[in-house]
Length: 348
Image 1 (cartoon, rainbow, N blue to C red):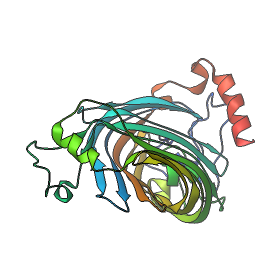
Image 2: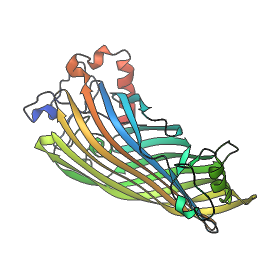
Image 3: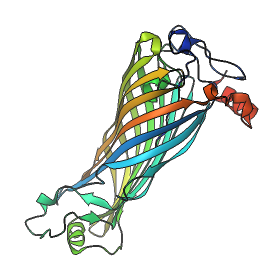
Image 4: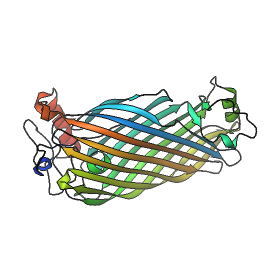
């Protein structure tokens, strides 16, 4: 699912808009610095359009590779952002796949914390040509309804430079924009869980024939990942325009258990992970517009098979600063509790 954070501005014409927001009823929020704008103190509402595509691959050392995806999934999103709270939903425009995808992130000072879980079924076979010698593909596409992928991650990344606007790099800079261009090294730790299995499920003959060639019946892989990367926010027109780029590669290793040809096995997997992002944001008094792309990838291997999972997102969003429309922080029930929790999370 989509989670992002907003920005604040009060005057369409001057650079002051990102530095001195309307603090009426704002209570606790982070003030501006020379390099980073003040935090948006009031609630924001964001609507957006999103394309998402997950790719999954498993390649046995003795057997044919299985590559599948869900094709491009168009979604419409609606989210409410207020201090540390982000709540909303993505609505799929096409019933392409079954399952769910959830993500949540929160920022504590210079720390970016993220949790995500994805459960995907009804994947589409991509590499039909590898099976065409012995399978007659009569259907337009092969949907593997009996194959299921489940993945979840807990991720923590630390920004080394306090002049780097974390939200401009990780989310959208209409919540707290980079006023002057700045970059930072990023170090991170991730715990990841990846799993897949073949289930007893009615499906087409050609889908059954494809899965019958896969010697792996199920697998569970847990990895501990250490990484370091770099992010840079290019700010133009005093933070009105912000281009954020970041990439953090990881070294991954951990235990795996799986069933292959009816035999249960244990192994030690190793490989790589990476996450990257590019986003362009335009800020104005009543809101902000952002265009962004994201990539998250995992590649793992052991003595019997290789595992690959990649997810790409393209998003176009518009956020409305509800404070400019009269919905101030102090008018929302529970604002004092929200402020107390934010003080605890940010250590301020």
